Image 1 (cartoon, rainbow, N blue to C red):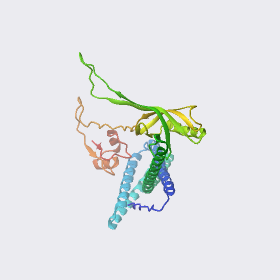
Image 2: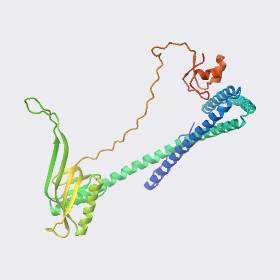
Image 3: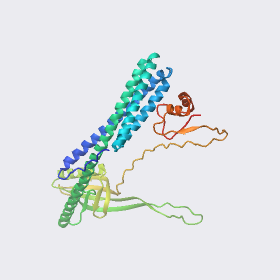
Image 4: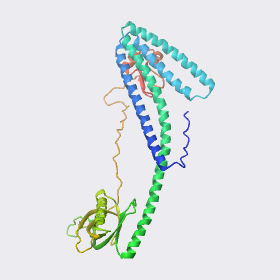
Length: 394
């Protein structure tokens, strides 16, 4: 059994260290997955080579039966090795080890027979290619087993760093928002005390403590509603609901700064918020917690002084929505009908339900039939039969 991953002690580690370790272990887990995928592709390539070799080797008299017997022994050995890994009892381990040794001895004998048959038929090259491919599969399977164990361990370590990193980021963001909120309230209070009524604009997410304090002139708020109606014969139209389609605030505002150049820099930032779709909070004639700058323009303010700028701004009331990503649709396999189709005769076939370790060769020995007849009667390949399916033998 794989040992449990110890809980990491991350107290005292800097936020930068945690963030770096999170990225490091994320890359490690991705690398593990890539290696597993590569090993899987190597197994697929080796299986294709075995199939190609078998196309020749199965032509040799007696080879197919020996090959099926070999596959059966391989399956049994794999099952026994898995059982050995799980068994704790020393006496049971001894019995299983003895059984594995016996099965490997039988397998070795079969390999010798298969080589002789292949050699006599002139298929030494194909037999060599198959043997090499089988060895590759065994190596890659062992590699995958080790990599999966490593990936599982690495993933747990990554999870600990990732959750700590996320928690720290959230705590840091809340701390920053609290500090910025306090600073913004202080700035608004100071300006209103000195100049009176002003409109305040600041980021709704409180990522910065920047607040625009603007003079306000002629503000106008409009609310648009969709009211669908149904016509009624010889009567007034009817409706049963209304939906807000727009809510806007527009007006003339005055931006102040140390100089006209300073005002221009502030204007560029405000325009940047509009372009990037930054959600803002408005406190003035209208008090909105959620708004967007849908229009920002500047005009030469000749009546004013050199440290001010006249702006025309339109705000649109809206809440930020979450982006919904389409879920990938998975094709559901339709269950094949097991009942008899209309117009067909019911035939009595004898079948056996496949269990772990069973092969055509084993079934052929048990029911006194040939492997070739089993392959003709059933659709599954001789190399590996799906567990749970019913195989016809008569």
